[in-house]
Image 1 (tube, rainbow, N blue to C red):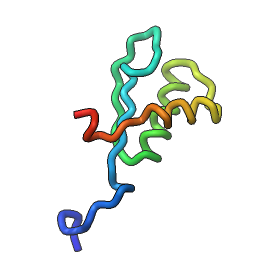
Image 2: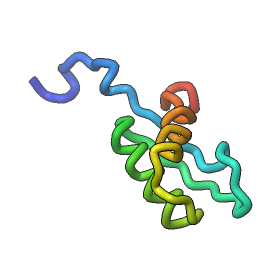
Image 3: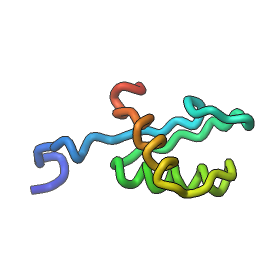
Image 4: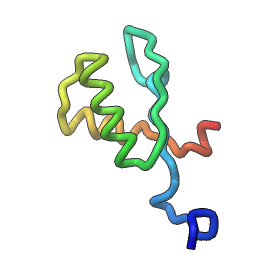
Length: 74
């Protein structure tokens, strides 16, 4: 079965992290989309490397709580 034939599950729902929706002094406009685990990993790495945040459980929880489904963003 190729990708176009398989049924999509909730784990296939793409998530989005839009830096414009996070408090920021820099006015960052980066948007990251993909599977939830991918987006969370990339968003945390971005927050640490570009915005000087520490990679803490609290940061991960805050970012995770602000992720949206891609369809809701369009």
